[in-house]
Picture 1 (spheres, helix red, strand yellow):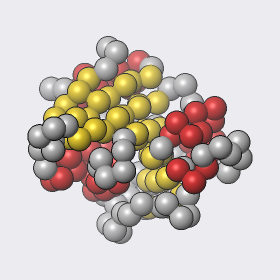
Picture 2 (picture 1 turned 90 degrees about the vertical axis):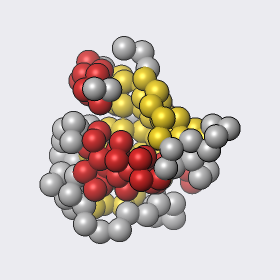
Picture 3 (picture 1 turned 120 degrees about the horizontal axis):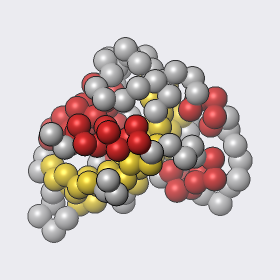
Picture 4 (picture 1 turned 90 degrees about the horizontal axis):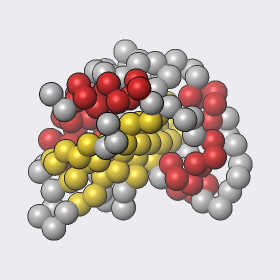
Length: 151
């Protein structure tokens, strides 16, 4: 499987899609999110958090880089936009291997630090203001997740 695109028409649908994904993820899985400002990256992360049992309000960690949330599986939410043109490693591997789900917004800014096995997601608004959520599985585990998500 190379890629898979799903359409969501509302913020609620985007969250529900992410909740469904959350139920398929395992500890130490890494999910990257790309998309323009306002495309729905943080909305998607809110849905993931709901699916993982996070009770706190999830918002973008733009100024703190990483926010940690407790749930059935911990959620590590990174926004690495401010690390553009930086080759600083803030301990990414510690998060990737800490037993939680790591979600990274603007992940292309830290491409050299990303694990090979991960799920890359791109969210785009189309002309009808729907969200096109495209999944790019990197590894067999994530291919199986995408096949299950498509059911």
